[in-house]
Image 1 (cartoon, rainbow, N blue to C red):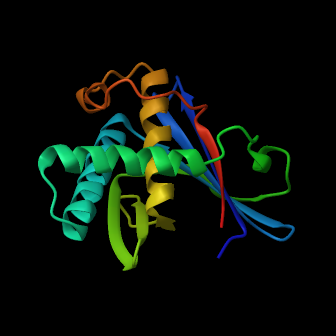
Image 2: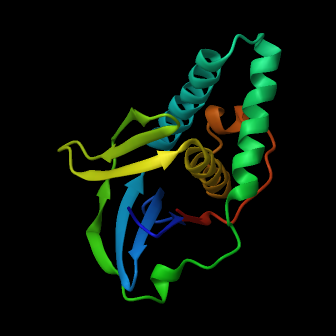
Image 3: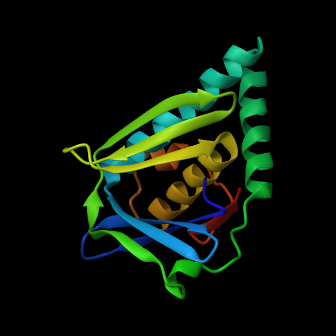
Length: 178
């Protein structure tokens, strides 16, 4: 498992896509994965993650729809409070081995429960190449938030993005230390 996981999302106007950069560091070694995300994929990711969060909460306890929504919001806020959105993305200055050049075009998301509170997010191309990211619910909430903000900053105005509401903005990058 990586000692440090960093995520950065950048909008590329020419491609009209988001470039998801994931760097994993272990000691002095570092690897960076680059993935293209389309509008369609981002909308699908957000809807899928929202459903996962609701399903997990609903399985853990019996809640009314209002209480479920309040618990979801509380869980999101708690996860975002732990994330570091202010640190710079160190793979830009570091000696990271680049994986995925050119970046892979992601078309498929698979989420599989691994252990209590841990999931494997598989971000895959149509040929099943891609990245398998082991993530806690905190990381999933943070990644979702970064994608929502990046899609808004790109001016994508998708219904799924607009339905999310007016969440606090992030810079589109984050660092997660495990």
